[in-house]
Image (cartoon, rainbow, N blue to C red; front, side, top):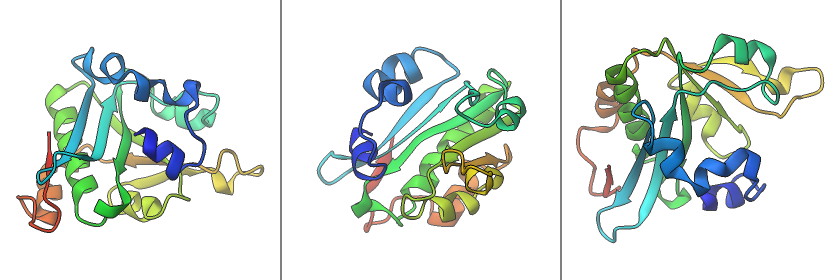
Length: 180
């Protein structure tokens, strides 16, 4: 995850934004309503992707007020840290991670919506999220440009079953990744 904030975002580690990366146990494993998934390359055991979900809605600020009001904490499953190493992208890994996280949200219950935000400057991010969810606020269209972030809602009905159908039920020989 740290590789992504340095390489793709160019921001490096910023404590107020990335504290969950340094302490994923507290952020994603201590609460039964949160989870962290890791995709591992079965050939060498290296981490090729991550995905997390928690019950914290987007805070205002820095997010727009309308977004924070639409996705309140406790009722919102927020997808976070959906990262795939560049050399493993376009193989269905992120889609399988999101599918497994959506299955978790449905099984956990109590969520009325699924939210995420993304940086559209990351290669492939905007197109990927548009293929799964709908844009609810694009800060690039705000008068001052906001943070340049796009905010999405993913239908609770979008499931791991759809992800498996889109990329095949089993990892392909080409991707060799296993989500755990």
